[in-house]
Amino acid sequence: MSLQVELVSPERILWSGEAEIVIARTAGGDIAFMTGHAPFVGILGVGLVRIKPTGSSTEEVAAVHGGFIEVKDNRVTVLSDVAELASQIDVERARAAQRRAEEARRASGDVDSDAAVRRAQVRLEAAGVTTGAGTH
Image (tube, rainbow, N blue to C red; front, side, top):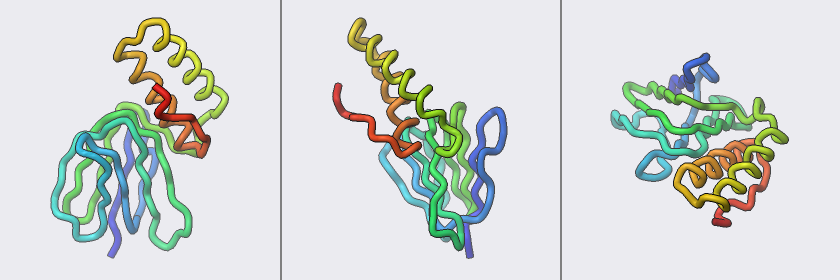
């Protein structure tokens, strides 16, 4: 038996299908969901969602910038205001966003700047690019 998974943003369903495991960053830390998991509702942090499709040797990776995750009856629903599949991330655009966010953080040092840097780092991480995360 597999999990039925949907990764949804306001614009569209980014991924839908059967999976062996889903790993997501929640407010309480990373959590993995497999078949038979107890019901769960959680707040997503800024981080990666990893989906291992049933019968596949690769995984789908998405950068998620907040939202919710619900698990019930072997169904996992990920709802996020902003989410991108790794394969759809424009790496150069993400690098430029990271540079702008880091410059803004150096200039102001405010929480919004820190959050913008983290979002850019997660997008690059999803795309498989080393970001130098943790340099603040």
